[in-house]
Image: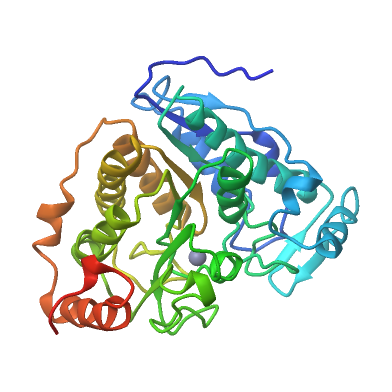
Length: 360
Ligand SMILES: [Zn+2]
């Protein structure tokens, strides 16, 4: 039974469930239950309460997890249910309720996509954990158990028959797991903008996909210190033309808040307001391509106060409480920084995308 009541067709939805807090990772681990506790607390602010359709997620079933993970790995994670602390990888820790939380994280994405596909709502932010974009076919990695965004893309394609899905990953870390899931698949365009060199070490310009999927992986590796205007510029000048040329039926966003200038794990200079700008840029693309259909999923972001305020800025934009102007923001980009990025990307991708085929 889904308790959601529709506030309005154009309102944003959120996936929210206290059971996500039961995924305990251990003292001092940055991917703590406190992240969602803080975000859920913010939802009670006067300017947030009652503004969002709340969707309680379902549990993903095993066959759905197998869309993106090996049976052996699923078995390994399932075996941790009800047991004590265990390390699936050096930095991915689980406890007795983590398997359930991971199934709910995937189920939340499926529910979000179902709601959008039914036409009841156009924008949803899945406020879930564990995050997902580092999780590989056969193993956990980087705080991630199952790859939520990759599972969502598979689900949209295979269960709902959508033809093309765009995944935008703005987390400070490269979405290695997501890239590997779709590098030979031309129906999923994966765009990742991330700090480099940095964990996990992948995400070079020259990683463009393989075989039939060549050109459908776009990596923008950046040095430290890129800020709102440079991100807006790259979204407007690279992501937007490619998104419009690709023509997705749905946009999924791996929203990592570790690009904020005060995040302890990243070296970027994005501000709280920057997230509203990037959100609007993606909303505009979705409006043009696919009737505004977009699902955001929570990835990183480890400064609790910053996470709270940045998610709030994102939600306010999604709910049309604010109206940012990404084109204007892009004007303030430091040209020395962005022109190099533009030329590197054009050089690698002009043979795949007419919209990036500029004279160099
Ligand atoms: Zn991250």
